[in-house]
Image (cartoon, rainbow, N blue to C red):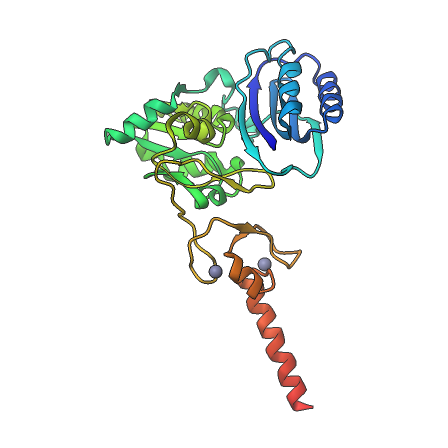
Length: 302
Ligand SMILES: [Zn+2]
Ligand SMILES: [Zn+2]
């Protein structure tokens, strides 16, 4: 059994390169794979290894000054979910791309937390609350909170533009933002505050922790994760699937890569249709059919 970790911490890191080297050495020693980003503002990682390896990783990383009280989010997997280890130093641990606009989305300006149990209770009580997904559309397609606003964006950098164009009428509402593990909300919620949203809170620990603490009721579908599992379960109370196969419309949360290497994003497709269409997405399967038809005609003509 493998443990998969998800974590972040905003804390000043004096020497990011030194920490990078130490983290790389630590992961290599215990055969841990995944992605770890370090900057002067903190650390953001997702990585996996055997349970014993991850225990040791948490212990040693927790000795680094500033990282003692890390909030680890952990889940299990039958297999190693990362192909490689990447430990990088970057200017920021998550990028909202607002430096030029002089908008203060620093961690000091983040919204207050709402604990998972309280969000759960707001739903149970049917309260008037605007729930905003701070992730990308392809993540929201396979899983989202009930009645959430899921921005039509493909990159976190596009969140501010979406807010300006679509959400200004909600500035006086009670607002809760959420993302996978919480890191994007630190900046998304700060941005909303900057834009005059008066009553914003961010879901503490993200969807991951919500599932653990509440059983996940009111979260529909599955949680998109950036590892080999692609999606994981959140809601164990009344689980559902909210996404459909591109071909037949059957309920499935299976994201696939298209057989055409130049094809863009992943697409959702059931097992049967994936096999039947040679692993192509709808667009490329159609193109493939057309090619077949043309070659038939040519054969007939000869
Ligand atoms: Zn299908
Ligand atoms: Zn394709």
